[in-house]
Length: 403
Image 1 (tube, one colour):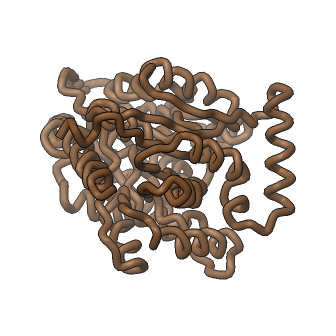
Image 2: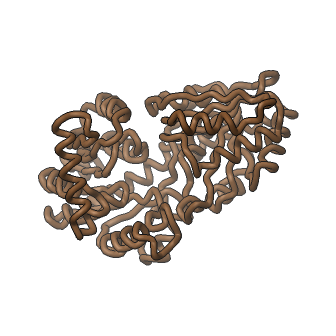
């Protein structure tokens, strides 16, 4: 098998930061461990994530990469930002419309001369396909989301039209494709009638952790994302806490504006017994040590779009690897997951149901502890990157063998 990987270069492409794409990072690490050479092409536009990107690169010195900074915080990035903005505004090219840094990334991808190009996010899809054709090699795409309906279900929405056009043009040209939930896989199979492998958004085992048995302290509640903002279900969580009306601590981790932070604080009733804690973003490997301090993790996705209902958030699998009880909103994918693994948590439809779930866990701490243990056990035995990563490497080996 080692002969398959020997000297082979796999190029992973994303239009954004690698720090905001843990799925890409996990794939890159798996590829390195399997013996492939890894090259990454990415761009930077969020200033605070630049340090996080560099932290990942420092931990993986064998990777090579091309990075374009267009944060606008220095002269070169200001020029890059201005040029890409002008091209995006005036070009009729759909590849530029979906990725304003398309030409720069495509040039770097072709120069790389990889044996396999993997697109992460729809903006990278045209680049992977075209670079593969130019270099007479293979390409793949990882659909972490159902992209055409990522933000809207309205077929007349310009974003939906653009993303649908990109998918229809480039997905049929792929040599392999993966998706992040069974429901997303099913949607794309129905559209394109092709083989797609589901690679769940799980994480490596954390088998050294000891599960905390909280017998007397207030419930410790946790939610995280890159950004703490609206349309993520946080308002429903706080409404439920107001109804629950017992002592609790709600910890929110992610980048936040003062305006939205104050908005959430003001949603708590004046007589609330909940203390709201805000935490800044951390390096990805630190997240599990932070999460394990808590009792319950929320996956509170809303039905804003079809994608939101069929995606499986990496929050769920972070909580499982950290040994937390998992409480999820009733979206199609999340409900299916809890129905398949009822030992790890509960589903809620509204604030009243969520308040009841919190009360039940608060009143019976032995059930809470049992749920936390069950979640952790599932992560160590079945839902981990050791298993899903092996599926991913099989996809890559098969693609490389077909060259």
